[in-house]
Length: 354
Image (cartoon, rainbow, N blue to C red; front, side, top):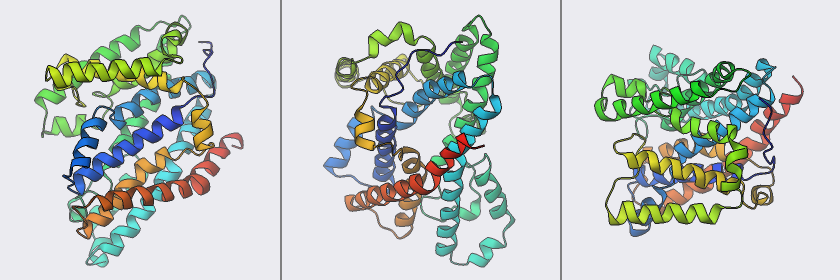
């Protein structure tokens, strides 16, 4: 497939940053047990802009775009994905181990437990979502619960070349439509019948219930020429439509609009409209991201490091005050900036050298 004429300068970096900050807010509000009016108002509003579904939609658009540029060199594609994901992830792992050993009542017993080493293998490979019982006493009972999305993202990476192959030279999208439908069915099944069961726990770390979010981004890329007129410089329109939708169907009619799982048709409709909000934001006044961030993409760092800070504070029983959320934001932004400068950016520069 020939690469679509999509502006290389866009606002995806700042959208991912805002999505990551939303995740930090939600986790801080929950784990610090914040119940004040500002926390409630913030939670009420930010619930409608969930970070993870936004990440998945953006990933579908950008990863398929990336593979389209490198479809003849699959090794380069996977190398680039590895360099984006693992250097910072491994640094995050080192910080995690350091914090665990520092806070452990007996670091010797931790180091002598075989499950600790199995956990280490999982952390540096693909099973970041697993936490052994020996680590359940630290912080929020899991060292870094946000990392469950890593295995999902890796599955997306693997799936893209497969989708590309089956589309073939004729660019037939039947495989995408089939996968989209299967994802919806899987999402509905896991959400309704698998809660707190092994099906729920294992299905929740596969791409099955989230693939449709990713494929909305893929389809937006594929049909860019058809939808660009609907989203380019149309952010205020789509944002207003989304707010009106929330007020009417959420506030006035009382429907539940927010869930990772589809319990009613509005859950799907919410994600569809939100995808248009995201795409329109990315291509409205395209240079905002470049002007504000100056090329510093710290969203990934904010996402993977923030739970370490929350766990460190919760372990010391620092809860019940909004100041702890502020401390978390300050600390994670500083750490993420340093991670970008000294780990992530140098790793990404290797794309051109190896």
